[in-house]
Length: 399
Image 1 (cartoon, helix red, strand yellow):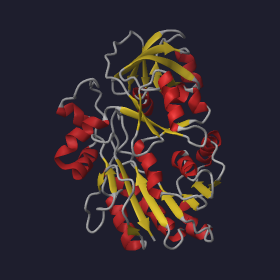
Image 2 (cartoon, one colour; image 1 turned 120 degrees about the vertical axis):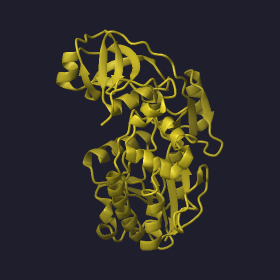
Image 3 (cartoon, rainbow, N blue to C red; image 1 turned 90 degrees about the vertical axis):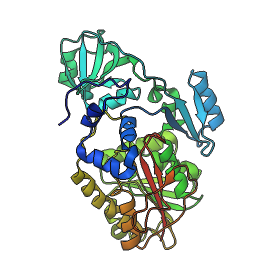
Image 4 (tube, rainbow, N blue to C red; image 1 turned 90 degrees about the horizontal axis):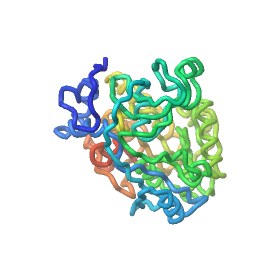
């Protein structure tokens, strides 16, 4: 259970309070991966990233032109030297936020979104009393963090009754992040918000024009659309997800970004090797559900070891199916936004031992080497939350 003590996110939290935000299992998993650096990793996880990345959609606009348009809007933009479509935008802060007399309490997901620059929408509100449209309000996390101030866009009765629409327009923030989804460049499909590590994953897969690609966990469409972009919309990409709503969301993404070489299907890809036995793609991307422990920022994380164990076994099912689906000598890339060895190097160990896959070197290589677990991990790529602003893992195989 998370303690309800308030901790200022503008200052380094005391050790006792810092560790109250994480389960003992998360602390142990962090120590397993990072040893003496674990405390610094946990501190980093509480804060937003310093650089917010967007991917230029070169199917519609050049990186140079997109950067100019963003800079004309007053944003401080950086072009990554290794990935020219990756544009980093500076996040400013932290800033002090003074509390008003009126408070709106939001859930964990909404609180973390507010720290990244989002407004508050009604489904994310846990509690609010005596709020009227136009009131100046303070947004607070469920464990007491003061996150931002803004103007109520509806009254408390409507927020709690209808659970729909904009609840608070945020004005004063602890961190000033770009509100990318409010930009015309987002709605017109010129850019897509995506971490540098996620963009790198598509480059590691290295799809070639005219090839056939299988994305086994395609929602919400970030990597899928990037693969289409790298292939200049040639060849064929098949994206699978067993959830109809997620496929609908992915369809909106690829339509907006102009990805004309993509076919989507509602399907549990753990059975793709038997249900689509004749597909035999040239390359397979596996980006399965994970604990997401590497994502920043976090208000808290109470993940238990059992969840890690369950997800690792789930991830192995995708690896097994993907290894059987890909053509002989084809490429498989596995990625997760976490840092637990059980979801990272141990899955690689399984892929090599049980699935006939061989780990190979990655290009580009922007992170650090994977941890040595048995005979596996050395050729993999890791990213650290405290150094690279995300905890992330990439493995590349050939069959």
